[in-house]
Amino acid sequence: MSGNWKMFKTPAETTAFFEKFLPLAGNATHCEVVICPPFTNLAAAVDAVKGSNVQIGSQNISWAKDGAFTGEISGPMLNAAGVTHAIIGHSERRQFFGETDATVLKRTQGALEFGITPIVCVGELLADRESGNTEAVLAGQFLNGIAGLTEAQFAKIVIAYEPVWAIGTGKTATPEIAADTHRAIRALVRAKFGKDAADAVRILYGGSVKPDNVKVLMAQPEIDGSLVGGAALDPISFASIVNF
Ligand code: 13P
Image (tube, rainbow, N blue to C red; front, side, top):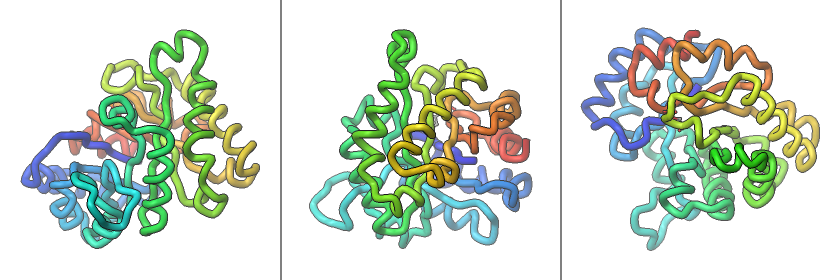
């Protein structure tokens, strides 16, 4: 289960979150728990989760190790800060910050090179869903991005399917829609990387996941976990999602 805090919370609020969250879900062993705060809170978060089973991720990562890349943060920097995961290609970065399938691939390769586990996001817009283009859009994102990885690289990534129309809208994909789409993504994986890779890859669902809908979503065998936005900001809500 992963939490994406987006652009919320200060370091002090991060510490306060973990003071409440860790006693409730800090020692969960039935799933991996990764929280992805803004860069300015990573140090406070890594410090707070020491000795627990919670891991910390960033919300972006550079493809380069260092260099003249104003505003970027690299894998070695994240590694040195105790960060283990990075969200890559979130729809908000694709929509507002010019992220493309090609940069998603480069960032994913960069993360892997420096020992950070990429959580690579894909997802369709409402217009794509309404015009019946969901699978074509996902195939494009997959083929122009993730498919550029080697088999060995692919084995180390996590995919997050986030329908853009379900993010922050309170509209969740029904468990059936989410499961169908996860199946379609797994079929793309099977065609490119083979059956074993398709069976093994973890595909998270994201988009208005809340304590009251996590159970029906996770009842779908196709859904391996979730990437939670709004409900991950509250320690009690996110703990109940982890412990559902
Ligand atoms: P919400 O859970 O707020 O819909 O956000 C989902 C998301 O974008 C997680 O990355």
